[in-house]
Image 1 (cartoon, helix red, strand yellow):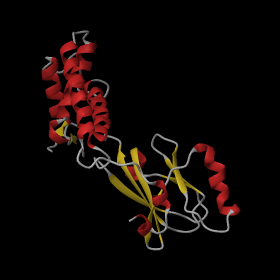
Image 2 (cartoon, helix red, strand yellow; image 1 turned 90 degrees about the vertical axis):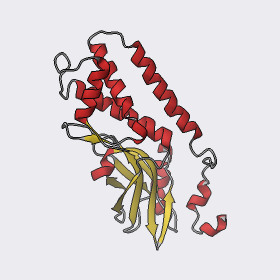
Image 3 (cartoon, one colour; image 1 turned 30 degrees about the vertical axis):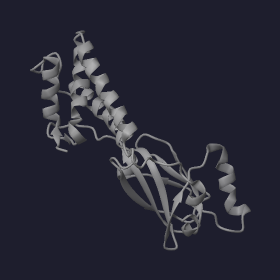
Length: 234
């Protein structure tokens, strides 16, 4: 992978749209830069789907508080796009938490008072925008390290030197996407570029289908994920 700057993406999009200089289409956040960022966002989602759960994955930790259910996600996690999992470290072991359905909220909430034994919480991501919230039910009974594994949203390109770094030259998708938007504003024919974009999207879908073909993902064992003794499942 190699980094490609916003300045380079502008120039390549202008070349594809045959608009070599700024004029009708300006180098601004409300013009070509907006379309480049739209292309970056769309491509990020397509690549996550194509290259699987490990692509772009990052982790972030937070500390739980006894009796507290809601934790506002900050820093990188505030831009959470796709959540891969939530872990909770208890007594030297790490456990994979499971999500709960909205209809189970009161059942989960009441477990802490209705049950004489502690049950690990389940989670749900609520809210959105720049302040998503991790909700744990029932509330943790102490201070534990909670780790989120996720893919973050694409970072918007603002300055000419800001860069993207996609595998295998896939920034070409962003170039073609932006060129289409430029030509549409000019009310020009975009059919050839649209065909090219469709071919790239089809190629990404094919990558998703054949990735890890030798070792395909299996159905997750939710019972094993909640078991205190993982040796029961080997």
